[in-house]
Length: 332
Length: 236
Image (cartoon, rainbow over all chains, first blue to last red):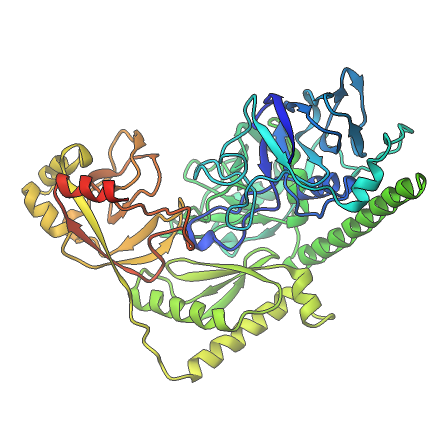
């Protein structure tokens, strides 16, 4: 069985795939990667299906020792990875030889990175997913973030990946990127929640016209924001109900919280708006201190943006696959 | 009944505006009917006190359905149709399942039992008798895997949360918070008044579904002794 060993654990590195859907009604979270387009790109670069498990890390990537020849790729936040002290690029497939050490290092821009290997991280699935569910101590690698000496099982590479692995991937400078910028004030598009009219006119105005800052109390469960206080016009008795990725809750403090990937399945705070799904991957990459503006769009616009983004990603997947096929063809 | 958008990837089907066993029953009937008639692109539903949210993938909805109509419109139309079809059918009262949960009240397992009794001018035994008498309804699961939101706590046992929350409440702990009662599936921090503990796991990661309870179940707490608690725990 193929595997690699963790030498340095980095920060909050864990096994994730596209999440565990179908069990929220039992109180379970969906979880999964915070930035699905970046994780999918990492998988495509090593000829894996989109939903293959990868390692997600935050702020500081792990260092790993390859115990066999392995095709891998790094995407997401900018970093300066080294393979045996030789700088290597991100956004492209790379071949590590048995015994080589990859150190991903600190993240420069963006706050989440992805490390994919051909064949995928092959831990036992739990309820159809390999995503780590830390609170339940299930899924991923022993239900917890990675630690030094963990030996992560790797699945069988696809035939396309195996073809590319025959020789070292040429270092000719090409790479694939999602072309995002995490600098400056970010505009996050939102649809209004049905409770929107119940917020005071002043709060509604402030929400759309003032800036909010991502605070340090932000993690995979959600981002706590800092800015103008928001409040309901009159107190409301609300019952717990389903909440989702991107729901913007306003607790009594008045400072909004955006729920993200590891959010609980239900919540009881009033929601003012919902982040458009198309902007969630970018939002999930913003480090503490980032400044946001919210821009109102309709649900129909949000759906159209979602469909367009899916089409763009499909095109990117095709381009990546064509590139891998040309690499393989060049060898035979 | 009405259907509202919940972002562009979900809709909320609303059955009422209060905590009511009749509303819960309607939601249960609808989700059971839906299980037999799902739509292409459906991902999952999450029932709560007054409504149920349906999550879907717009690409799949359009791929399986109409190409020229927004996915959300198609989902809303489909669910409205399903609601109508269900209304036309003869009412089938689905009988509820009663789950008995043994609880060892007081002692180390229920450090707040005495305080709860004192607050209500009751004896410890009276609190136990009153808490274990009703059949509670599981309105929904949420907060943590297998955590039940129960309705039916006798008014006279309603107790405010502890002023200082505990850092760790053991899995299985049974508690009261305001007008709610429930049991913790996992070790968690929390401010509930803890009156006892069950040896039964509420979160069962090796079975499908991974929880002891489901929305719509009835729960009866059965008082047991510490010895019975230990025996049940050892058998598992």
